[in-house]
Length: 319
Image 1 (cartoon, rainbow, N blue to C red):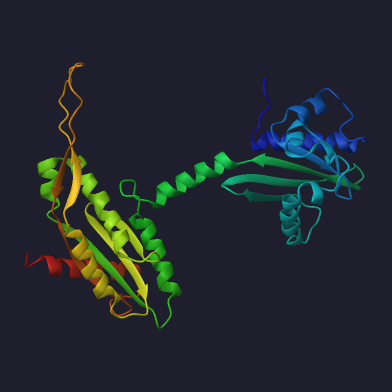
Image 2 (image 1 turned 90 degrees about the horizontal axis):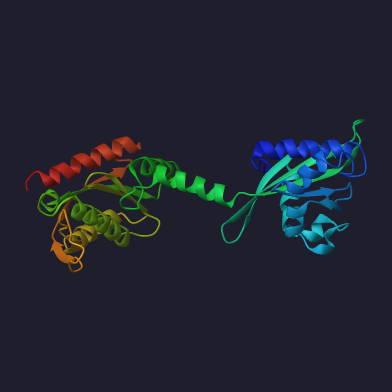
């Protein structure tokens, strides 16, 4: 029997709230229908008069504001909320329109603020209804969805799609003094790891490679997994030797042994058996790296990637 806390429910409730105000004596008319909605809606509702003073609030609004909030200006009761709303309102030519914005409270807490002007049936302004909705969970869910679209699930670094987007931005924003280099990295001796120790071990190697690539470059450089055992790095610098130095550093780092945790789990494990022993083993891989430079080797991301890919195969071919 609860009320609908969705945005549609919010809109309906605020309309009912406005309807009661039109009849005079804020929220006094039709005490069963309008008042019941007002008291039970999950969002905090603050009713303001024309001077911006809080003249009514629901229980959720009680929890958000101090006991002495009634008849006090919103600017003093919730100064941050008032400031954000004022900044948004100043950008609108029509001061009578609804205002919706998002307020971020550190750390990682978000509220949706909706300010709806209230008028009588004759069109006379009598105040506004401020509806405050906690959207922290929604925002976190949206961030997770966006993260899943841009981040490689196995390694936690950028996927190909996001890498291409960011690389194109770097190219568009580059200056004549910038040296942009794309490194195409293909792992050598990776297939034997999968064949000998299994895909779980291979996944651990890919995760280790991603970490080592991140440690090998600067914070502003882009690192991505293109797919399989192929990675890429985009460097932007005014140092023409940066790409060569970074390539050498990556090859050196990736040639170091990678330690992975390996276990053979039997199909049936007796209840009385000893805990499984997890064996740590080391594997050795290396990397073939091709480099392409902007704009010499291409003025678009696709051209740079293709050139770096070909350069990588030229390095790998003699092996």
